[in-house]
Image 1 (cartoon, rainbow, N blue to C red):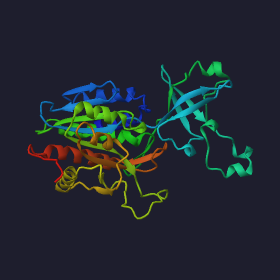
Image 2: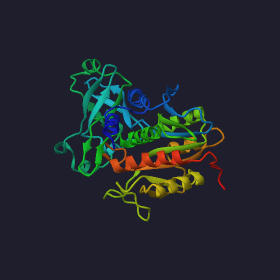
Image 3: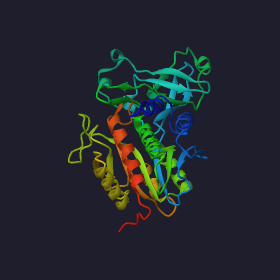
Image 4: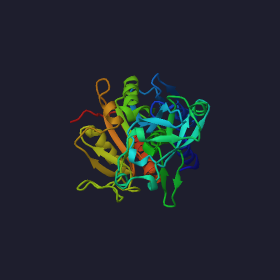
Length: 354
């Protein structure tokens, strides 16, 4: 990975993008991609559409959702403590004792999600593994509501503290890898297509609001009207003690991007992707599934008269927590696979299932 690409990914991780509040990260995407794109547009929904080879009559859409799970301020108590509501699928069990950032109009406010000390809990309460939103509060050090309201407003978005850990073996850990990994891959794939002879126009989209219903993918694919769509997201890695499912295909960090197979996937696109990977000696993994994929693929697939879809995922440990983990190598290989797939597509490619 080039230093410029590496720094772009780190910038994505360091930028807040809770669902419905993606504007800051979209500025990062636009700034970085301006040197590679033929054009960059932001639609009314907030999706950023980066295009290359726009004059081509046939279109390929690449989608990576930029929104991350987060919270929103729902109540400020008289004693200055702040209560939250979720944005996306939050696991309440991992919250207490976390550090968070409240993103106000002027910047950010640091806070702590408090917890009753174990010393003050009843013996029966120590065994409880569940909490509810009314028992989750944020402490910003305010003495009362008046002081808290000088820094925080109702409706302000909140994220986990945006830090990351680099590991010696090419792994990276931290919050928001779901799905800043996907945004990185689709933009990196477009970058790798810059200057190449292409038979298709390429539209790399940083989609919004995936975590609350695949909404940005639906609106952007309607507007672009592509023939082919490739969604890039993360998927659950099975190579850790917390993964309990049995008799399923393994997903291992560092073993390559994951190609999904099932009803969300166009069989011709699947065949092209696997041929491309083998031709270019790109290691990949297969994930079969009998249900529709719960990511942008399913929204793109049924846009307008239908889109021939593929889905590539990045193995991710500890999804929807503040300690997600992925491999830089998987990111690189996913971007390379998509770029080679696009570059090798012939003008005569027919994606109608046969």
